[in-house]
Image (cartoon, rainbow over all chains, first blue to last red; front, top):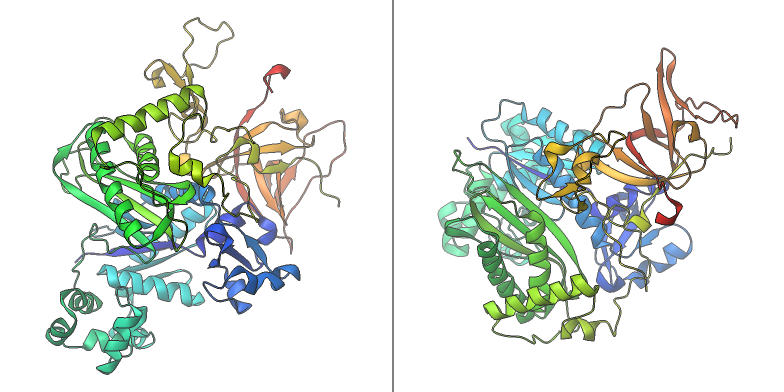
Length: 428
Length: 148
């Protein structure tokens, strides 16, 4: 039977800030979205102040003025680096895993001799020690149940951050499902939950006990799959990733294995152009771009390499060239010669709708000549200094600086912003 | 405008430098096996556990006899188990501090190393919040004032 784990960082952005600010270890923190718009991350203490997710900054400003709340602009450079560290740390303990978003990943624990709960605790302890970030781990026979257990592990402090579905008696399992609304199940959105309520399905247990054939007729095969997964039947393999909310993912496995960087770059540029196109179609811009690179998981005779990294965009953008450039830069960082690659993918996160849309100056988007242009651009900038040549869209964007009134230092990626360790003596 | 600064060199190949062909008489500890494509990758030398390695600056003089001076860059490995005698980064209350760790039968001690100033030995515990963050594995200092 397959075993999956879903590992995610608690209040991830705020926890990244806390690693370098021990003085904020137990205080309420929120992190704002692009342009200091609204609250995207709250610590438990901030939730206790009654701050809601998505609250605009002006709604919480009075708490900050009274000294009850610390507010940060989002620092994607820091979060991207901390994410990479967290994922690399998890990778040191599990044989196979896939990054799902900047702060969560699925791991495949199938066939491991370890007790799942013990392994979950080891993962938590190692991420905490190596990187300083608190995490929760949910484990189950399907990805949907792993995600569900993760949710419960986060909610119930006495679980110590890890919950294994297989460790619960059938009665406890039923009770756990009954305790959560159907909308809390992975893949069940609010609209769907309302329709399900019309059928008398309100909580996750009722959803699990619903007739799969009926569900399929009314809602299609995707929702039927959710029902089967809730009953412990794994329908989603590790790489079947439904994109999380607020994220756009474009990836595909190659027909044949690819070895060369240039071949990967062409595929990645294609996916990125497609993602940029979809982003513009929905009138959004992305603040953060990630790239994933995978060898063939099931060719055990081949050397395996799985890598993922994120890069903040200087200005939230949907511009094809800006996104491709960021994607290719990440590819160059991740690419290792000598592996046979099966899959490359791009992830766009921190999406923001209704912002200034930048014109897509150059099309067709993946024309090799355009890619050569990108290369020339980078060569010039490398030789004569950053910003010597810029894309039109960037030049326009530099006229309006993104609003970042409450920035934190890039503690891990810039020499000028590293933290200090005191070798003076504290006053006794 | 702020000058563009290189990322702290943790990613492979982020900090490479041309390989010198002359032998250094003083006996530079040679990571000769590790060079590739004619450059030395200092990350290979300095970073044993990339996801767990951080860098920070030292402030003050309480560790000057250990070779740590104000402004030195410290490489910190959070994956390495702190042993008695290691120089460690400790989070003490709300600050980070750098000290020599001594494990004694009575508990852990944090020793300053500066014979000229009588800094006290710290014995954290009781109700004071503290935690061992990591082990200092390298101290990087400027040997030439002009290179600052």
